[in-house]
Length: 307
Image (tube, rainbow, N blue to C red; front, side, top):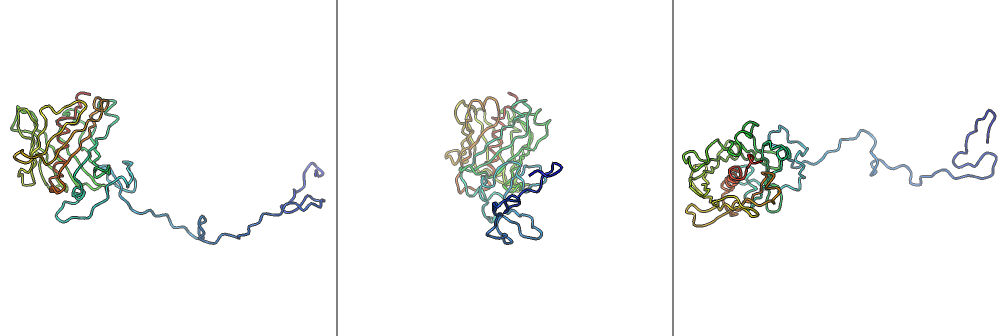
């Protein structure tokens, strides 16, 4: 109804009809349940609210970062990690994982900058068990000049961390020769677990045709031999390095460079490896075999100068 001056009067109120009519209108909205009680699901309780607390869990950090907090920069959910085993007496801390497995899978990460520009970056590896659960994460620690000037023969330090970001192993490769023409200064890799405490070595042995290595314990006593093929490069097939007894009569394990496909093999140096060893092998020797795999990768399959 229009009022004088062009204004309109108040409209009908909820529960009432228009003024001057007998129509009762709609009833006002009802709440038959009454107000929700304090603490009812979906409604906050009165008073100050406590901050939400999340349960602790394993998180991954990158080596070299000072903080391994609740964030996961590697983007790996906690469920992708191998469950943490209990502490074992006389076992270096962090190597308890190796007591429960007889096979390791190593996947080198593809670096986009390296693929597009040929600029050599620090190598990074995921170390998994046969079920695909991540056991460790390894990262090379090197400077730009060494990586791009020395190529595959460069010295390096490799840090290996567990699911909490704790550094449990360190691999140290000094600058040495790898040619059979210079047998007095062949390759050598030191394995430390924990960092600062040597548990073994990988020593290259001189041979005119075959790549050969010796696995030694912390007292530099020979334990196992590694014998590779005459030509450690095959198209469309794996390359196997047999782990043998000292007399080379029996095979006790294997380090395999797995074929990853023509495109990946041709345009990147990101490799996949598999390591097999007896379940009851000394855990320190298992760790040294892991170090031998990285040394083999750098010596025979790191072709940065070809890109």
